[in-house]
Amino acid sequence: MSVLSVTEQSVQTQFHDRKAELQTALAALLGDEDAWVIDLDATVAWSYASKNGAEAPSFGALLYSHLEAFVASLREYLQLYGEAGKSCFLRAVTARTVVFEVNPLGQSSDVISGSVSADGTYSMLFHPGWFGHPSCDPTMLQVVQTIYNAVDPVQFSLQVLDGLRLRARYAIDNLYDPVRVRAAQRRLEVALDMEGVVLDPNWFQVYGTLQPRNKLAVDSVVKSCVSYFERMSTDFEESSRIEFRDHAITAEIERRIPSKTFRIVIVPRTATIGAMALEDGVVMLKFGPRELGEWLPENAADQFLSLFS
Image (cartoon, rainbow, N blue to C red; front, top):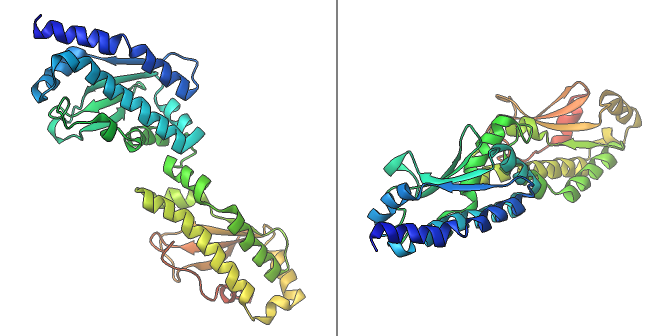
């Protein structure tokens, strides 16, 4: 048999005859009643793989391994990002189609990457000089971040998460500790003799203004907000200011803060890092773009009382 015949046979038996398994797995993972399609041009793919060391008898298995790796990484993506991640993927990949093709960026591209086209097709992209090379292992190279990088810009433009990046939604849901925040609220309630205090991290404004890009920066926003609330409330709790024991003053505070809300806000610049201001019945806790997380409040109680002097 010619090399071409052997290649065609391997593609048929090792890929096409098994492709339905992958398509069914995609639909099952996404809880989608619509059928999913996996598509590729084996002739074009072989023209690259054959130059990089791939062998005709196993070429179909090579194709299958790449798409199988995609399904596996999608499973991990959904396990990590949950329903929010699923919603983002489904809203982005509206064509319910995954294609496997060469990266149009050519030699400057990553070994394996992804993109979502304007018509809602997910493209799993291979590097022209690496696809088929013995060291190009799709199980190592097709990772969760590959899918995230393809899907998140699309969901962000569609406002699937109301203007939040998917990683920000993950950080809020998984790193914002409600027990610690509730303890901080309670310390403020006791110090101010005021029930129902609200600590508002103001996620949409904070993330919308800061636009952190890497995971560490995204996660640190949530951690910094929790730390700020804790340190501020502890300062109130430990304050020796007699005003907090003056019922006339605490009554005036409650009158002027009807919302009982302390809200973090990012502003272009601040005269004092962490400056407090009273706006529309809300205590605004102001930080410049590079200040959140770099500073924990000192004399927060004094700053607060100065708003009422």
